[in-house]
Image (cartoon, rainbow, N blue to C red; front, side):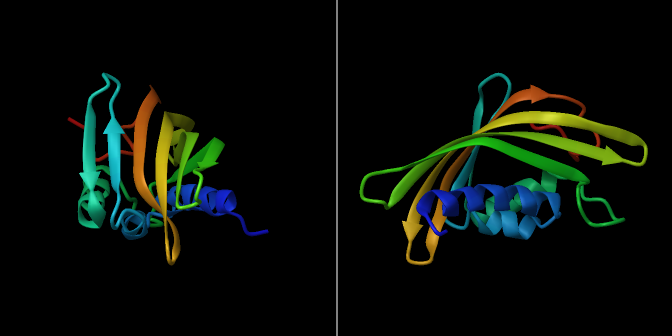
Length: 151
């Protein structure tokens, strides 16, 4: 079955899969003409626009391990609610994600819980991210996932 809602959900899930696979170039490509807005625990927002800036952000924060070239994470994205706007050229979605991590010396555990608020635009090639707003709701031990703490 092919539908707009399904295609948008696939984009949301593909984002998580790219990160878990350590494919930061593909994550950045999803925002070639889009942006990420990161919201910290105090409500401060930081906007990162375009492929180059998104790639630089993820490379500066995401710890990729040499054994399998991934961050040893599993993003579990859920509660995806998609709203395709009248006319079918724009859409929005809300979802939640919990990120789990495990390493040989770091037992399996949830390390962060976020809320995503996304907007999408339809182009000739299909749907693309216009904006992903990432709001941290819960935070655990990120010491093995991040190279540095956000400012």
